[in-house]
Image (cartoon, rainbow, N blue to C red; front, top):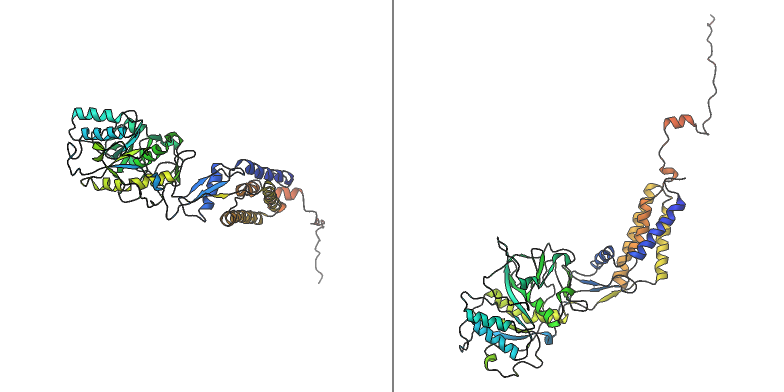
Length: 452
């Protein structure tokens, strides 16, 4: 026996490790992490990865495009709440009664799904006007409302409209530690509608108005969404339960829905394309407008947008970007076409695995230094082949399975004759080397007296 593990047992162990890795690793977290690391060698993040790395569902990679072209047909229908120069409304800014009249005309013109990008908040609202507004809001099948959020010293309980439009932090892949943190509504007395209402944030105090649009924020143990994202989901009639969120990579709106690129902070990573939406309809036109004022069938949802010149700069910037944001997220325009990374045929991969097993099986016979150097050289060669095959030929090799062979051999190297520890002095005295002759015993020579 050469060491703690005979050579006849090491080879089957190395082969079994490679075969098990080849069979069970595709599609797992380590395999996805390996593909992500390889993709960073030839593509700039953030990018979107799909597939499971198997022969039937190979990895797919989508990267950002420099000049996205959003489909203007995906732009929402906008009703503009302006300065009311003609004085048609009861007050400026419009009162709850005025908003009730506008939203009632939404319903009259055929809109069953609506969204209010204008924040519904007043200092001293009329009770009768609030009742009329509440009745108008309750007529829609679904309603999305915009609310500014902030982070204060004293947190508030999350309103039902936000909780219904949120997901648990446990449902977010990769964690939420870098997302903006909020814990309250920035304005008091905001109207949030009833059971048919979902609320999304209009602005965040911690995010600049002119930077990339934030789409996610963390409120205690929940993740809340931006108003344009909820409008895109409402437009596509997709449930929140089907979303797949990966900060730093992408936000998938549904199993078959569009992909929205995200950075690590939950912001839109793709630039906004040039969108030429239909001209906004003035809110004043709804009062005396005929039944053909909205296109038929009416594109839903219809959005009430705050375009008043007296609005705060963040609100004006938000209103300006709103059509392009919704169009970009619903038309899936910020990413390139998916590039496939297919696997080699089973027979070819098994040949590669056989080579990956044969080399470590031979290396374990060498002394420790040469053996370890050989393992490192083999691992480096496998990694280099993985990068070259993916970047140049678009082929995904079974690199992790091939690395399992030298890894297993490194764990169970065995010991060659040169690796044995020197024998103890007691052992050497017990069994003398055969090549060393035993010296013969000689009698001491007696010395006589020297004669003169």
